[in-house]
Length: 345
Ligand code: 5GP
Ligand code: MN
Image 1 (cartoon, rainbow, N blue to C red):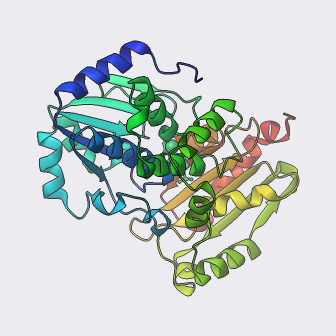
Image 2 (cartoon, protein in one colour):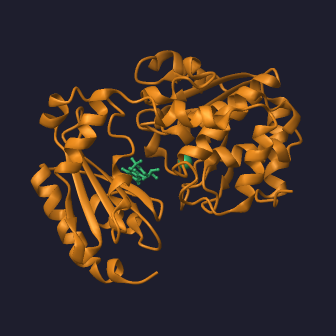
C-alpha cells in the first residue's frame, strides 16, 4: 500500500475538473528531460483512456534517447508550432503544468498559459512553487513528477486504466530523475510502484537500455575529451568539467550529447560536488549544471552565484560571460562554500 501523499481534497478537486473537461493541455519545462516527458506522456496516455482530447506541449526539442517513448511523436514543440499551440492553450478546459515550479521555466509559452482562461493544476516536485495554478500539488520529497502522476491516477481510482504504454512513460521519468535509482531513491514506496508498473507488462531492463545505451560514437569520444580536461579540487571535494562551442564543433555535438556528464566526476572517491559548464549554442551564455551527494546544497550555490536554482543534489543556472569568467566565479563559489564542502555528512 502507498502512503496518501497528495491531499484528498486536491484529488477530488482535480477529479471534478476532469469530469467536466474535454480539452486538456499538458505543459512541461524547457529542455525537457525524462521526467518532463515521462510524466507528461504518462498523464496523456491516461487522459486518452478517458476519451479526453489531450495534447502535450513543451517549449523546445527533447533528446533523441526519449524518442522511443510511446506518444512522443505527438508531443508538440512550441518553438516550431507556436500558433497551433497557442490556440490549444487558449481553448483548453484544463492545463496541467508538470515538472516545473516557476512560469519562466516554460519560456515563451508562459504568456499563453497565464493568459488562458483554462483551469490550471501544477504537479511538481521542485521547491517553492509559484502560485500560477489553482490546484498546486507540490511534493519536493517525492523524487519525480512521474511518481506523482502515478499516485494521482491511482488515488482517483484509475490504476486499472493505466496502459503498458503509460506505465513505460511513468517508469522512464522515475528512472531518469533518480539516475537509474541511484540517488533520491531510498523511499521504499518507489519499489512498490515499480512492482505495480511491472504488472502492466513493462520491460524495465529494456527501458534502461533504450535510455542509457543508445549514444553515438562521437558522444562517447566527447565524454573522453571532456573528462581528460577535468579539473579536480581535492581541498574542496569538488570537480569541474566544461565544454566550449569550439569543442562541440570538434565532436559533432548535438543537443543532448552531454546529458549525464555532470554526474561522472561524482564517481571519484572524495568528490561530493560536481560542476559542468557548457557554452550554449543559441544564447550568449554558459549553462551551468551542478550535482552533489549528501547534504551539500547545490541549489543554494546555484542561486547565489549563477542566477539559478533546483534541487539540493541537482541544480543549475546560467552565466552571461566567457567560459574563463564562469570558471573564476565557480572557484569563488568553492572558496565561499569551503566549510560546507568539508563538512562531514
Ligand atoms: P540540469 O543540470 O539537468 O540541467 O538541471 C538540474 C535541475 O536544476 C533541474 O531539474 C532544475 O530543477 C534545475 N535547474 C537547471 N537549470 C536551472 C535554471 O537555469 N534555473 C533554475 N531555477 N533551476 C535550474
Ligand atoms: Mn523532475
